[in-house]
Amino acid sequence: MAAGPTGAVLALLGVLSVCAASAYGSVAEREAGGEAEWAKPCDGAVFRPPSALGAVGVTRSSGTPRPGREEAGDLPVLLWWSPGLFPHFSGDSERIECARGACVTSRNRRALRDSRTRALLFYGTDFRASAAPLPRLAHQSWALLHEESPLNNFLLSHGPGIRLFNLTSTFSRHSDYPLSLQWLPGTAYLRRPMPPLRERAEWRRRGYAPVLYLQSHCDVPADRDRYVRELMRHIPVDSYGKCLQNRELPTARLQDTATATTEDPELLAFLSRYKFHLALENAICNDYMTEKLWRPMHLGAVPVYRGSPSVRDWMPNNHSIILIDDFESPQKLAEFIDFLDKNDEEYMKYLAYKQPGGITNQFLLDSLKHREWGVNDPLLPNYLNGFECFVCDHELARLDAEKAHADSPGDSPVLEPHIAQPSHMDCPMPTPGFGNVEEIPENDSSLVQVRDHCICLRCLWPHSEKGRTHNYAAVP
Ligand SMILES: *[C@@H]1O[C@H](CO)[C@@H](O)[C@H](O)[C@H]1NC(C)=O
Ligand SMILES: *[C@@H]1O[C@H](CO)[C@@H](O)[C@H](O)[C@H]1NC(C)=O
Ligand SMILES: *[C@@H]1O[C@H](CO)[C@@H](O)[C@H](O)[C@H]1NC(C)=O
Image (tube, rainbow, N blue to C red; front, side, top):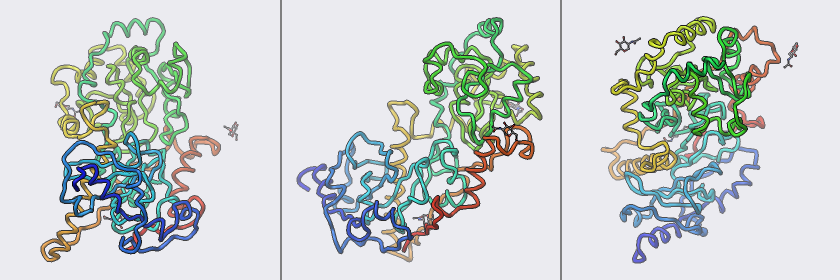
């Protein structure tokens, strides 16, 4: 270990065994094979081909290495199984320093069968049950990162899908590493002063509607356009996106849908001309909240919201947004919006959180304060690196517990399995945005969405897309 920390890590990795090449064939071969494979985990003693991780080298991050573990040669490896996602600048592997100690994070799939590879990290949108690396090894945790909309992978909204994983990082507060506030940079973002109401009154006089809709993803499980279309019969709505469009954004750059979800200053200035923003998420799941909710608040507009059923828990105070589901019909909602539109005093009550001391929700304040990752914050890690360290720390703790048990079974019981729960991706079955399912024509595209992605998956699971059944149980 005289070569210094970098040399020590490389030396360590140089003897890392990679069993995939010998015992199980290449990843590609295994994926092509039909049957669920059964295999023994690597014991590392039989055959040690050149290391996948050692070959590419490891960049050291700053921090003090823990010589104990390195000399013991058991630095846990975290393997990103999803191809596109490896939150490091270069190379295939990197040493990371976390609260409990160090791990190696890698995207080199040849490390799959290594006894030191303690966790496989999956990105939810890319996860396909039929392409999961089987057989599952008992010493490996499966960790899921899925901050995106559940509509990107319905499988995970079903009990058998989410329970494949041990650790989760999702929009749900119940997940192991929650990202519920991933779209909220902080309280200052909410407190930003709003433009004077008289400016908006002026836009109204020039023919602007009180309500804005900006949506270009139309057929979604939340079936939001069906509701908005009905609401438009009762109150003027200016709709600029591809869905229910009735006006055009002023410039080609703003019309580009890539701009629509950003913090583009010109776009924000334009949107803030409106007093009410329709904010309907593309899927209805507890704690799934996006920029659709927070951006209008940043701009000092009132969100007219449908999305997370538990959204109240996160609001700056109990009078800051209008919840669509509080109204018995689109007509009643339209009447209420019209009332606020004509009554500045009542309208301004919805923006009281912008005043000093106006953010009274302690749960929100605490959640922002205690999260370890930042949103566009150069001083804090992003949540990808934060999640890696969360998994690293979990695996170091698990190794310690296993060692304690091996040393003294009487004093240290075997660890209970840690398995993800449906509450980590809590999305009830989709329902029509307005009206009853019986009233919707068979050829309606939104209904097809709902059927294809949810109902059918529910019936077919656990068969794969190709109709094969896999065994997702870990091999002992
Ligand atoms: C909102 O909060 C205020 C102040 O804490 C309280 O007096 C009021 O009853 C609450 N309203 C609702 C609808 O919960
Ligand atoms: C991981 O989850 C699986 C179920 O999906 C379970 O069988 C296994 O025991 C869990 N492993 C750990 C280390 O908790
Ligand atoms: C759906 O079917 C109805 C009649 O059955 C037809 O009038 C309508 O054009 C169809 N819509 C689409 C989108 O195909």
